[in-house]
Amino acid sequence: MMRTDEVTTLEINGMKFHAVVGILPEETADGVDLKVDFKGKVFSRKAVEDDDIRFTPDVRDIAGIVAEEIAKPCNLLETLADRIVRAVYARFDTFLAIRVRVAKLDPGIYGAESWSATASLNWENENPGY
Image (cartoon, rainbow, N blue to C red; front, top):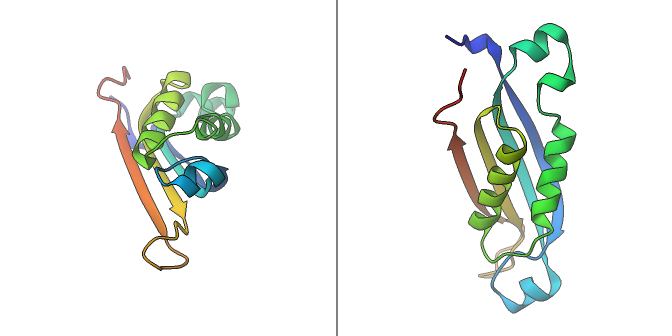
Protein backbone atom coordinates (compact mmCIF):
# COMPACT_ATOMS: atom_id res chain seq x y z
CA MET A 1 0.00 0.00 0.00
CA MET A 2 1.23 3.47 -0.86
CA ARG A 3 1.97 5.89 1.98
CA THR A 4 0.92 9.51 1.65
CA ASP A 5 4.52 10.66 2.13
CA GLU A 6 5.33 8.88 -1.14
CA VAL A 7 3.14 11.23 -3.16
CA THR A 8 4.39 14.62 -4.31
CA THR A 9 2.26 17.46 -5.61
CA LEU A 10 3.87 19.22 -8.56
CA GLU A 11 2.54 22.69 -9.32
CA ILE A 12 3.18 25.27 -12.00
CA ASN A 13 1.27 28.46 -11.33
CA GLY A 14 0.67 31.53 -13.43
CA MET A 15 1.87 30.41 -16.85
CA LYS A 16 0.83 33.20 -19.22
CA PHE A 17 0.09 32.79 -22.91
CA HIS A 18 -1.55 34.62 -25.79
CA ALA A 19 -3.70 32.24 -27.83
CA VAL A 20 -6.74 31.81 -30.04
CA VAL A 21 -9.43 30.59 -27.65
CA GLY A 22 -13.01 31.73 -27.94
CA ILE A 23 -16.05 32.16 -30.12
CA LEU A 24 -16.18 35.93 -30.56
CA PRO A 25 -14.73 37.38 -33.78
CA GLU A 26 -12.15 39.46 -31.88
CA GLU A 27 -11.02 36.38 -29.93
CA THR A 28 -10.46 34.32 -33.04
CA ALA A 29 -8.83 37.20 -34.93
CA ASP A 30 -6.63 38.75 -32.23
CA GLY A 31 -6.38 36.00 -29.63
CA VAL A 32 -6.71 36.39 -25.87
CA ASP A 33 -4.44 36.40 -22.85
CA LEU A 34 -4.59 33.23 -20.77
CA LYS A 35 -3.23 32.14 -17.42
CA VAL A 36 -2.78 28.42 -16.75
CA ASP A 37 -2.20 26.69 -13.43
CA PHE A 38 -1.20 23.03 -13.30
CA LYS A 39 -1.30 20.75 -10.28
CA GLY A 40 -0.53 17.04 -10.36
CA LYS A 41 0.00 14.32 -7.79
CA VAL A 42 2.61 11.74 -8.59
CA PHE A 43 4.06 8.72 -6.79
CA SER A 44 7.55 9.97 -5.94
CA ARG A 45 9.29 7.51 -3.65
CA LYS A 46 11.95 6.43 -6.18
CA ALA A 47 12.68 10.00 -7.31
CA VAL A 48 13.00 11.21 -3.71
CA GLU A 49 15.14 8.29 -2.54
CA ASP A 50 17.51 8.54 -5.51
CA ASP A 51 17.28 12.35 -5.84
CA ASP A 52 16.92 11.74 -9.57
CA ILE A 53 14.73 13.65 -12.05
CA ARG A 54 14.48 10.54 -14.25
CA PHE A 55 11.89 9.11 -11.84
CA THR A 56 9.47 12.02 -11.77
CA PRO A 57 7.88 14.30 -14.37
CA ASP A 58 9.97 17.40 -15.08
CA VAL A 59 7.95 20.61 -14.71
CA ARG A 60 9.78 22.04 -17.75
CA ASP A 61 8.35 19.22 -19.87
CA ILE A 62 4.88 19.80 -18.46
CA ALA A 63 5.11 23.53 -19.26
CA GLY A 64 6.17 22.61 -22.79
CA ILE A 65 3.15 20.34 -23.20
CA VAL A 66 0.88 23.13 -21.99
CA ALA A 67 2.43 25.51 -24.54
CA GLU A 68 1.96 22.95 -27.35
CA GLU A 69 -1.74 22.51 -26.52
CA ILE A 70 -2.35 26.24 -26.19
CA ALA A 71 -0.88 26.79 -29.65
CA LYS A 72 -3.84 24.84 -31.11
CA PRO A 73 -6.90 27.11 -31.53
CA CYS A 74 -10.17 26.07 -29.87
CA ASN A 75 -13.52 27.53 -28.91
CA LEU A 76 -13.84 26.58 -25.24
CA LEU A 77 -11.64 26.86 -22.17
CA GLU A 78 -13.05 23.49 -21.13
CA THR A 79 -11.74 21.92 -24.33
CA LEU A 80 -8.30 23.41 -23.76
CA ALA A 81 -8.15 22.19 -20.15
CA ASP A 82 -9.16 18.69 -21.28
CA ARG A 83 -6.51 18.63 -24.02
CA ILE A 84 -3.82 19.67 -21.54
CA VAL A 85 -4.78 16.97 -19.05
CA ARG A 86 -4.87 14.28 -21.74
CA ALA A 87 -1.55 15.35 -23.27
CA VAL A 88 0.25 15.46 -19.91
CA TYR A 89 -1.09 12.05 -18.89
CA ALA A 90 -0.21 10.58 -22.30
CA ARG A 91 3.40 11.60 -21.68
CA PHE A 92 3.52 10.91 -17.92
CA ASP A 93 1.17 8.09 -16.94
CA THR A 94 2.58 8.11 -13.40
CA PHE A 95 0.23 10.91 -12.37
CA LEU A 96 -2.35 9.91 -9.77
CA ALA A 97 -4.37 13.10 -10.26
CA ILE A 98 -4.15 16.25 -12.38
CA ARG A 99 -5.87 19.61 -12.06
CA VAL A 100 -5.65 22.22 -14.78
CA ARG A 101 -7.11 25.69 -14.42
CA VAL A 102 -7.30 27.89 -17.55
CA ALA A 103 -8.31 31.53 -17.13
CA LYS A 104 -9.09 33.96 -19.94
CA LEU A 105 -7.73 37.26 -18.61
CA ASP A 106 -9.75 40.44 -18.99
CA PRO A 107 -12.25 38.95 -21.47
CA GLY A 108 -13.83 42.38 -21.93
CA ILE A 109 -17.48 41.43 -21.78
CA TYR A 110 -20.29 43.12 -19.89
CA GLY A 111 -18.19 46.25 -19.34
CA ALA A 112 -16.13 44.69 -16.54
CA GLU A 113 -12.39 45.22 -16.39
CA SER A 114 -9.57 43.18 -14.91
CA TRP A 115 -11.33 39.92 -14.27
CA SER A 116 -11.12 36.44 -15.70
CA ALA A 117 -13.31 33.65 -16.99
CA THR A 118 -12.02 30.28 -15.83
CA ALA A 119 -12.47 26.58 -16.53
CA SER A 120 -10.96 23.97 -14.22
CA LEU A 121 -10.68 20.27 -14.90
CA ASN A 122 -9.90 17.70 -12.20
CA TRP A 123 -8.88 14.21 -13.23
CA GLU A 124 -7.98 11.21 -11.08
CA ASN A 125 -6.29 8.03 -12.20
CA GLU A 126 -8.74 5.25 -11.33
CA ASN A 127 -6.13 2.53 -11.73
CA PRO A 128 -2.68 3.91 -10.85
CA GLY A 129 -1.06 0.47 -10.59
CA TYR A 130 0.86 1.21 -7.39
